[in-house]
Amino acid sequence: MINSSAGKWARVAIGLLLGAILLYLSMGGVALAEVWRVVRYLRWSCLSIALGLTLLSPLVRGWRWRELYGGKAPGFWLLVRAVASGQTLNFAVPFRSGEIARVFMVRGRKLDTAGTIAFEKLLDAGFFAALCLVLPFVWAVPKWLEGPRKWVIIMAALYVAVIFALVTVVPRVSRFSRIVRIPPLGKIPFLVATTLFLGVSGALVNDQVSRSLHIEMPFIAAVVLLVILQAGIAVPSTPGKLGVFQYLAVLGLSLFDVDRALAFGLVLHFLVFLPTALMAALLVIFSKEKTVAGA
Image (tube, rainbow, N blue to C red):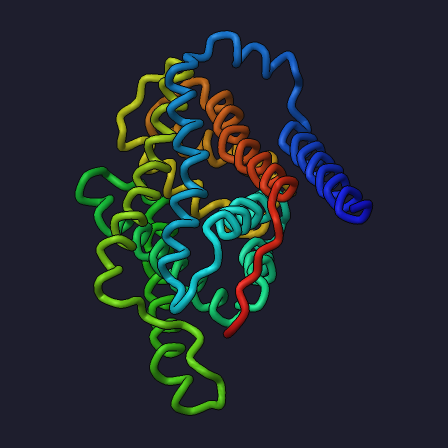
C-alpha cells in the first residue's frame, strides 16, 4: 500500500516537473509584457476552436495508430499518451526522438510498434506530398519555396520506396521478420479519412489563430503556412523550436503581406506545444501501466 502510494506521488511529481520544464521552454526569451499585449485583444471564441482541434489531434492519431496494429492492439489511452509524449519530445528536444520514445512506451510490442509508426509516417508524408503537388494549381508558388516543395515530394517518394522494400524485399533476403505490414483493405478508408482530418485540422488551427488576432488572410495562407512549418520544424533545431517557429511563421505570412506575424507565431507556438505537453504530463500522472505481450 505504501509502495503504491509512493509510486502515485512520484508520478505526480514527475508530471508536474515535466509540465514546469515545458512551460519554461515555451516561454523562454519572451517578455511577459509582449504576451499581455497580444492576449488583451484575442478573439477567444476562435482561439477556443483552435485549442479544441489541437487537443483532438492526439486522440485521432491514437485512434488511427491503434487500427494499424495486427491482432490485439494496445489500449487506446496508452497510445494517446505515447502520441502526446512523442509530439512533445519532437517539439522540445533538438532531435526527433519522439518516435523512438513511442516504441519504448508500448512495452512488449516493439517490432509491431516500429512498423505501425513507419506506416503512420507514410500516411502523413503522403498527405503533405499530395498537398505540395496540388499547391501550384491553386497558388503562385514563389521561387524560394519551390525547392522545399519539391524536396517534400522527393522525400515522400523515397519513404514510399523504403517502406516497399521493408514489406517485400527485406523479408525475402534476410532473417528479419516483416516489420511493416500493409493494413487490410477494409481499414484503408478509415486511415485515409483520419489522415485527411489531421492535415485539414492543422490548416484550420492556423486559420482560427489568425482570426483570433483579427488578422485578415485567405485560407490558402493557412495551408501554405502549414507546409512551411511542417517542413521547417521537421529538422533538428533549438529546444522548443524557440525562434525557429516564430521565424517560419513570419516568413510564411510575409508572402501574404500580413502584419502582426510575430504575434501570430507566438500564439501558435503556445497553442501547438503547451496543451499537448500538459496532456502528456497529465496522462503520465494518471495512467496505469498496461502492456500487451507478444510480437
